[in-house]
Length: 494
Image (cartoon, rainbow, N blue to C red; front, side, top):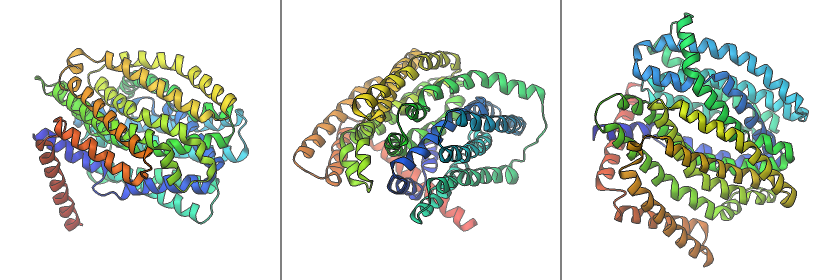
């Protein structure tokens, strides 16, 4: 019970004790497509996709390695972080130059190249900040890490939305991205300056350990990024920036939902690493519970959004051109629960030291899925003038295939037990909810009415099936109460 209450309380901190940060993300979803238009949003989406791939070369796979190493031996935190920072700074300068050169080689417009340069600077700042965020995660300081990330998001979103409302161009808007990354870096640095000073002393043994230990994760990250994060870049090779903008609008909406599995994996990875080295069944039980909770939360959200995609885009204040994003939004929404489960499975694989097995999965993906992206995008762009649909379909196929393979990689003891009993129940409840929603849609019931009805049907079914119990509700109340007490104490202290 203590483990569950502590985990849930930390998860609430990561998600945010208030909905302010989440509301800003929703605000961005509402404003960016409306003010940037499909072309401007396409330029920004392309820049983010383009720089994300090269950003993995700056990190060199050391982020997850740092979390695991520090979680297992907190006394060496400052030594690891100082040397990891040295690697990031050197690689950041080199990769920044590479991104500028490749962007010019691809022949993007001058305006797009300028946006890529600005976002590239943000990528370098973020990868440096990630060194300290990995340290916070390994030390169990998820609250401080959440504050840093939220501060950066609030700054980037608040400044960006304000600029757009004042009539700023996509180029001017893009400056808010490195600004938010800089604020996030400042906050995480504050923790280490005040509470955990870092010794910046180069150590060949530590540098070697980081490079060797991070190599499988680096290769894994490169391969994953090569198939999973360059969708907009590949799309830009077959279609103009308007089509990339349609895909970007759909991605923005679904990315809001990814905050759920992101928070879950951020909280549970250090716990997985700690429990795995302890005797007893606690690791297996905790893993099954986390997988069940992730699927329970994401299945209705993803499938529900796919069903409601046309109504969602009609409700949002987007220009008429974004109606072309409906198929992409539906397909990306279906991929949300798959992506969430894949994130949890990858955390389990890291905790039990199966990075090399995961590397084989990613190697398969990088051989198969970029051609799949190209083929799907080409077909839909040629036949329907909408390559965004092809990019979303390739994403769904790729994530599903990798999810199935990743499940088979895990030890049988993790794949057995409560989760296998819960998954069919969750699937059945999701289908029941979607059937009711589809009926309400046919009857002409508006989106704002059938969404609560579908949620009530799913929640009631989960309660009857025992997927949500009184213990879960008690755990939630205790976690919320303790979080409120902690917030009140912090306010008095300040």
